[in-house]
Amino acid sequence: MVVPRGTGRGEEPDRVVPTWTDPVARQASEAVGGPWGRFATTGRALFWTPLRVCLLFAVLALSLAWVKQAPCADGDWSGHVQYTHFCYSDAVPLFGLHGLDDGAIPYLDSEVEYPVLTGGFMAAAAALSRAYDRAAEASALLPAVPPVQSYYVVTCLLLTACAFLVVRAVLALTGRRPWDAAMIGLSPLLVVHAFTNWDLFAVALAALGMWAWARRQPVLAGVLLGLGVAAKLYPVFLLGGLLLLCLRAGLLRVWLRTALAAVAVWVVVNAPVAALAPENWARFFRLNSSRPADPDSLWNVALHLTGNRILDGPLAEGQTPTVLNALVAVTLLAGVAAVGWLTLSAPVRPRVAQVAFLLVAVFLLTNKVWSPQYSLWLLPLAVLARPRWRSLLLWQATEALLWVPRLLWYLGPQDRGVDVEWFLLAVGVRDIAVLAVMALVVRDVLEPDRDVVRTSWPGVDDPAGGLLEHTPDAVVLGRSGQRLP
Image 1 (cartoon, rainbow, N blue to C red):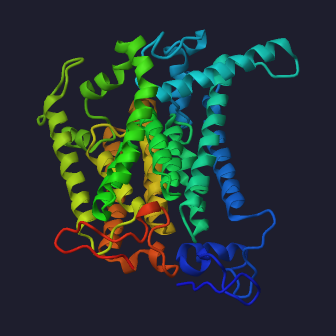
Image 2 (spheres, helix red, strand yellow; image 1 turned 45 degrees about the horizontal axis):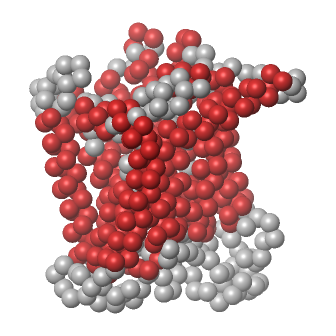
Image 3 (cartoon, rainbow, N blue to C red; image 1 turned 90 degrees about the vertical axis):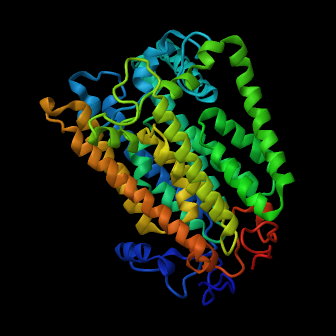
């Protein structure tokens, strides 16, 4: 534990020093001279503040991500370059498929399988890229590129801005541990999937919503989380986690303000599109009901191992997997109930990030769809729930490695790809890694003395807790409420 005594030479630093508290950071620091010195000055940097250093890390990671994606940027995927160079991105093929190249407006002119705000993000990127294309035609100073390439570059730039917002929000949620945000900037998951889809947009909104909650602004938190749900469904589980924690703390009125704000902004965003193009607006919901088990899901692994003899069996084109949908709902509810029991019965009320991480992880593991980039949803939550380099890097390594056999399986053995068994093995390894991180988070909840966030600085309860921090318990399963230390 680091005890604050000041920031000058010969005094303890005013924040947690990773090279003093984390063995991986300590070992990595040997490459630049070893751990931070006992008499080194901290907290006086004029430019290289923790935020700017973490943003620089993100720039480096996203630069690597762009280099990886560059072979696919011009839309020429001949020779299966998207698989052989591991640069597949949904943005490139959907540019033409949804008519964005011809100025089509998502939902109004074409069906889009994403929530409304993601469709708006796609349309905004297309509008900006068309503006660039017109400027390039009018001036010889700008390089002319294929429309799909300018669209993809604009999309990646917008997603880069979203990644920066995630870093900023996470750093604000770490309290006396600002260097935990470096785990976002140096994330292998960010390198692999930052530009695979538009998920960083929703991740940024969710992270900003958590920041607003931590700043004791529940209505603003609801607005941002509602926008997140309008971009991807998963932020609704953050609202669920806040419900459980507010129930335990007796702050249901506060949560209700957040929830009503979230519902209101979701309705405001969705209602115009639903009124103008109801069929296209509803496609997201129809697709998620009728689609079969995704290749990356545990349900698909079970179907493969049993030769499609369980659940609904072989499905006809467009047939809804009713048995699978029912089992997904039951297992999800069971997982949410387990997290709820843990939240309400733990010896000390869990932190917001711990409950949110567990709920989102339960959703991913039990859902019939786990697209590769969905794992970005877990990244900021995992960093805040258990900021330990070793476990987070090991988990992210399995996510990065899964991308390789997935694309090689699409390539097929006939084109020097791999058989499906290698891909399914990688899925199993990834799921075990996620379960391991979940188990470590549960252990920290049941044994708060193991929680590095609470034990690395005196008097810390939950830097992201907002109104929950140091609030006495009102509802605790198995015992009477008590004030947190």
